[in-house]
Image 1 (cartoon, rainbow, N blue to C red):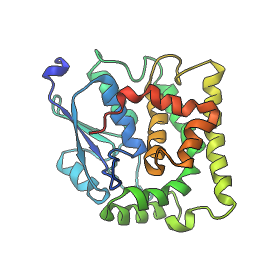
Image 2 (cartoon, helix red, strand yellow):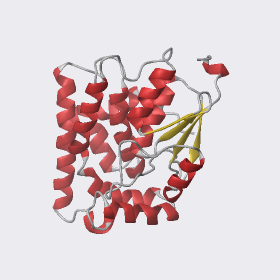
Image 3 (tube, rainbow, N blue to C red):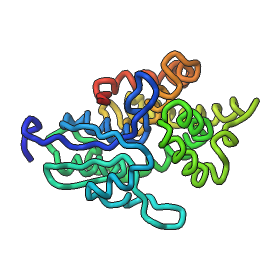
Image 4 (cartoon, rainbow, N blue to C red):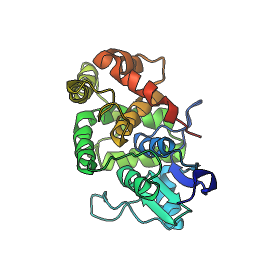
Length: 261
């Protein structure tokens, strides 16, 4: 593969934000964005609204997500997705994007070290249930704070019919004492992952070196930072109070790879 200076910029498809001062916010697309930044590959972002994902990716010649399907089993187009004009490839789903980038650009920093794909698959499987209670809080916040009107309508309907299981984002949002109970579930899930890292005295998930697993955590943190705001009590709880400030330190350690233009 040619040197980075000679490469044509890859294309990263991502969701825009209406919130002033916020560009990239989606936890899944951040995984791909971090991956591209970490490998030092040139790329440009194409911002697309939720209702336009399928038509945009189809027009770009991208296949549906090979892992996720609609509840009825039909194909679904999702972000993140990248198009690589240097090879003609289009890849969707963040882990598959990381695998593709490592295979295609092996001279760049490695995202998934040799022999750790199974570990990364397992980490993703463990991450989801440990943080999933957050969706009850995040769905409403994303809808009202981050999404442009067309995406908000689409997002509300889709979330109601999948992860919220027939309940609107307003009705899913915890009420009264339940708010603290849900936050406690999320905190406990993050503490479990912090404990895994603490047992080895690890700075990052796999030790002293960054891997794709750190970008999974980083994407979750970026979403919460962007939707709540840096000065919010919610973000201060996550970044400062939880797990001795581990999560705020992790984002600082990943700051070099935060380009989101």
